[in-house]
Image 1 (cartoon, rainbow, N blue to C red):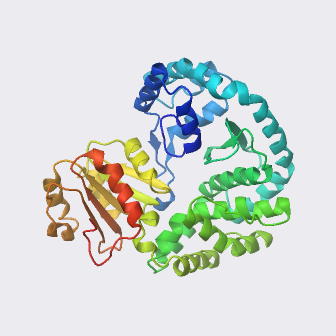
Image 2 (cartoon, one colour):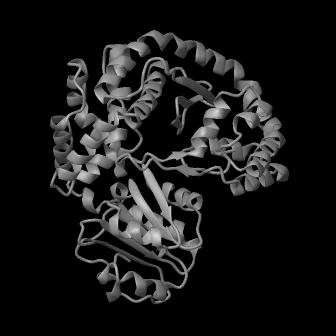
Image 3 (tube, one colour):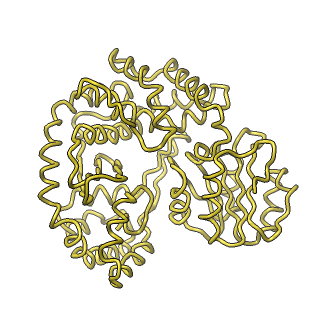
Length: 436
């Protein structure tokens, strides 16, 4: 249902498959629309951890973890108690019961035997993966211990190729796998890639502050961008690079990641990653300094590249939900973290405007001129531009060196097209705030 609803982090190939099958079934379409209305995203914040490490835990992760560990929908209902409001949980379970037969007919019945074959083949990597886990745990200096198991949860997508996804949820690594896929070595690399994300997130708190402080002290324009890409680049360099080489005795000569920036950054830092792991060294100041210098040398226009700026973003908007913004932005840009603050001038939004180091994106789709008039109190440059009943993109740096993007729209329906325009533009002109 996440995929059918077009949610962030799902496979476009799987969505296309779903749409082609019960495409004319009104009941299924209505179920998708009902699913979109169910809020399963609540965030628990870990305020005693470094602010840039995105240590909020979403109830969505807990719900997915419960699904992995449930035998059926009745079991799932009980395992979800307390994560969501009971009414929400009841509605979710009933909706899933209503559409279960669609899933069985479209996907499960035909592909279950193929998935069991995939599971059998991937299980052969278990022993070597235990050894790999111990090495990369040392590299990350993670608090994760061997007595807390990782569970790999496979789910099938009919076919042999296309765009595929994998996501970690607590200790559950949810990995999509094409039913006719045969490249088990690469798929095992994906499993280990997701494991790396968990180990990074659960680094010892002392290590997290050491990393945070180093990036703050590193006085370059590129430091925060290297930091925002570090988690994904490390997971790629280790899971798709070093671990793959450990198992296959050679590096994978294909692309390691679908995003060009992550793929390139991962391959550039790979020699350093390999050296540290082979020497049983943990991430330290030398490694982080090398990463920043590497990023700066190879991505010189990163500071004005929308693709990179959107990697970590705080969005300010009125009358919008995080899910709809996330889906619109992720259609065009790879996102590591996106946080919505609404209304724009609520006290907690003001605090974020004053203190958040990430890219600041303002989406203004009503009361346009009034909102701009208030916004100029925080960003005086905004006062030089007036709303003329046409879409407007102001992109510039504030006195703190943050990228500020102000999207002024006639109405919210313009958001997808304006984001697409930014994607095509790639870089914004640092000499001219008004981009279009």
